Length: 112
Length: 110
Image 1 (cartoon, chains in turn yellow, brown):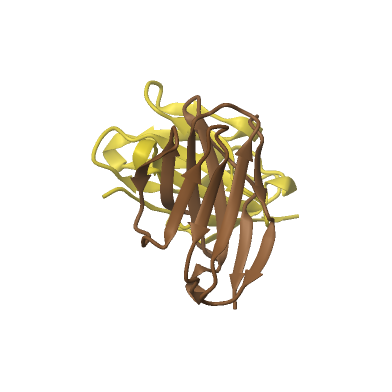
Image 2: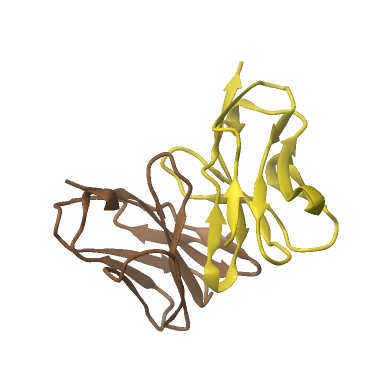
């Protein structure tokens, strides 16, 4: 069965500092991997996705993620965070008829 | 961006009642999925419809059922509501290798 672990429930980062959110997955085949962001009371917005090819993927809002098969990881990074980045971030694996399997999320807090 | 509209945005139901949630899209994508997101948790896959047939289901009991219509709009029906059904219900339209999510319906069961 596929699963996703986001080890950090909360992360606090100062505005302008760099960010890395961790994601580890378990999947039987080559994974389709996603990062979504959710603002309070809102739906999910796709930041980026990995299907194949270059293991470093670029997304919207200055985010990037690196797929590391040997570590079963797909960590999300941003070189300099803005106050508007404060939100809940979800890593997900899968797709197709089995749907997406999401992690429990990481709550990002931005300090001024 | 593909617009996905869910209705209603909020509702309150009593335990044992039935509820119908709705989802529509401006696009012609023919795959729709439903997810349940409990407070403080990630979304959980309920089921998926493709061309009006259910073609995938997560670990949810049969009292969770759905429909997809020829215009690709969709319904999620939940019978015999339980307190634990209180959650945000998200609809997603799939296409172009990605899923577009609606804003969700917040269901409270009292």
